[in-house]
Length: 610
Image 1 (cartoon, helix red, strand yellow):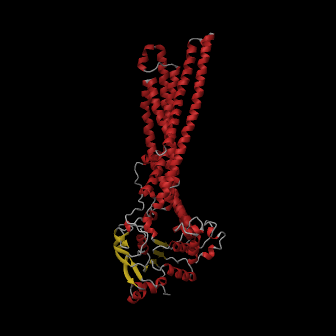
Image 2 (cartoon, rainbow, N blue to C red; image 1 turned 90 degrees about the vertical axis):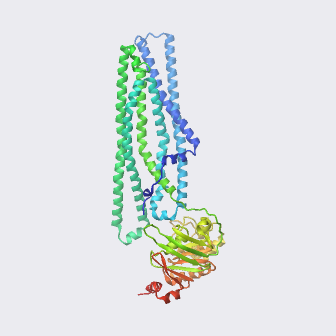
Image 3 (cartoon, rainbow, N blue to C red; image 1 turned 120 degrees about the vertical axis):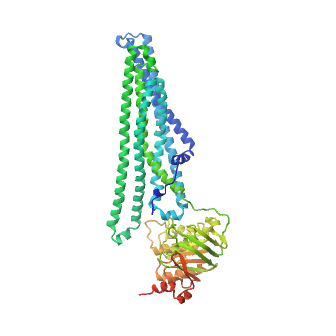
């Protein structure tokens, strides 16, 4: 089995995520409004502080502070000015907190809605996914796509909607304000900024590669752990605990190394950017102070510097903006790890969505079938380099009982997979009542079939709902009649709430009892065509005889396919297809095949050789 990372083909992951986000325009709009107000309040703070510095500088220069010779009018004016600045500062603080609350609330609600859509589509993709992908890809890997991977996408999108948006707009806004205040200082900052971008890009690129590998290895670990839990009894039976632990340790070791590398680059990002930020801030502060000293001596040199005249206020504003200008880069680099993780996970999710779904459409409607089935020159292989079914031709009359026998791997179950359209044939044609099965809507087509597999499965619902799984509108009387026909009514009625008993970990049913419920499920559905894949393999001999009688009644006037390993169960078949290496090597009734003394005879007698 391969992991889903080996099948990644999705492009434009971010663009596809935006298509989900765009469905919630009001949340996006509120997030943008909150973000813009939050940015505006942050950008006003240095201007307000600058105005305070400017007032203090004026008071100092005019001797108000030193000589304390303020007149009553001047004192009232100063108090009024301070009061206005205080109110502006208070309003600015309240606006900052309120807008931040609006930003995060709106963006979080939107992201939760996006996560819900991703989960719903993920589950839909899993339920409609072709069986070939289910068989090929680790089940734990598929489960991670609709669980852990979506959680990573949520974390990344949340930070992108808040911190990334605020960071980018802040950088653009401060760049404009820097040019308004002083062109030369703005140019110095812009010249030094690419250092941050180059360093961040290199580190984030390395981190993304490592995180992509980490997600893939983590999925393998998850899948292997699930596999070991499901088959723990087999591991214990063959004393393979050491080997199982060794393989787990090997995968975990790989996860440790790729995880360590990813964390190393993630941890390296922040201090690297902070160091460059501090250097830029220091350069701006030194230049600003130098220009201020020049301005004290030579008023005519202001034009060389450009912008607003230097004083304590402008130095405070420029240094504050220089510091704020660096902060968004730092914030963005901090969330790069989560965003890269989100992109890697989104790639896996969209790869699942892009996998071929079953073709549910059709042009010929069929609600009932007589059961005439023909296969014309059918060719099929699971892998192109390993042909399996070759030029298979069959003509099966309605109401026939067809047994398919042969050694393991000969293609018995493959024929069933093709009949059920779990897999598409490579070439040739299969018809039912003369209609090409590929032209029948899949939902209608599968309603024509009833199928009992060798391995039965119980869903987390009541016993009655399990029996009525193929016919949800069945009455309680119909459910009980099917259970009685399948000889499972006696143990169901002994359960605490009989047919209403919820199947969960507290209810213990044997494999044979589960198989009987699966048989009752098919009996209730009463389809036109039956497929029995060793349907009584988990049932004892005495019960098997009863079930065979029930099956005989059920199979009346129905085309039935029986995949059999125990040849004693198909002696009365109308036709036995003997398969080997994907081909039908013999076919006929039991007596005819024994008389040939060929492949079937050897297979039959080998089961009774002691």
